[in-house]
Figure 1 (tube, one colour):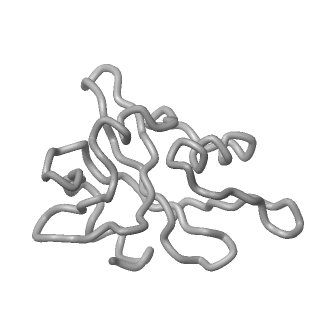
Figure 2 (cartoon, helix red, strand yellow):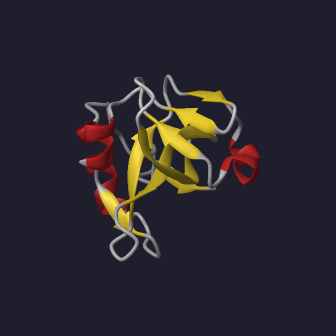
Length: 118
């Protein structure tokens, strides 16, 4: 797996599912604010006039020459919570991202956000 600081090298590369089907293009990485480790990626999907960013967990993801392979199917990722390409993940929407992938969610000990964009 790559570190959050390496996102500049991977941004714009293809994101594929376990079967190698292209999902979209890597846009950014969200880190867990408690550990500062990569947690989710946003992937640009959709038609050129209707692009959006969907969230996909990085748990189990691997990198190959020119792509990032995630552990979830193309269909699951495309149905994930999304934001506009110019948008921002609102704090109250974080739990929906985790719930979509059936991952445990808890805000920080002081109620702070769990995800931060890098």
